[in-house]
Length: 185
Image (cartoon, rainbow, N blue to C red; front, side, top):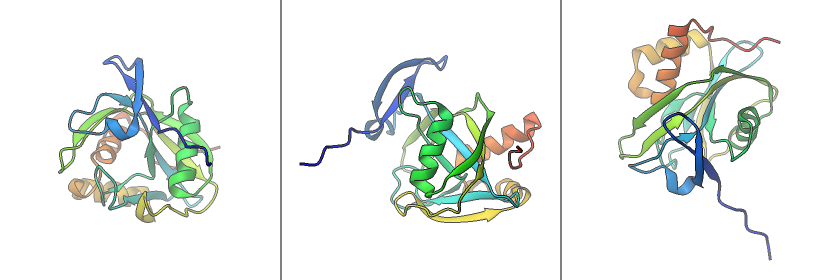
């Protein structure tokens, strides 16, 4: 008999972003989502373009919305950069080179049209692609490599067409003077 995989768990946080427990991911994203740990990553190629993805139409929250390259939740005890690499492999079918944290204290709360709440402490990373994307259909409907300046202009012109976390991340990076470009090294 095949061994059953335990359900994916997310790390629950208090208002000070300290761990207070875990919960199954499948039970966390509701209309009363508790604060939990996540991550967000913007993947760049060797030409300096950033990968944007359109969330699969089957996703529970923000289906069909364009967003940054990959997001997810570190498993309990899993370092954020390892979670970024794991999730990029799972969602995008790609390996990453350099991964660096650029917004260590990013947090947001947003409600989608169906009433599902995202309530995340979500450090943001930049990464360099080491392989081409081969996305999983259940995660990504479409993807596109774009110039960072073109993405910033599109988000500024039509923020409603993008995930709220991408809109907020780009705004916060601009406000902090963070260069929206591929990691060096």
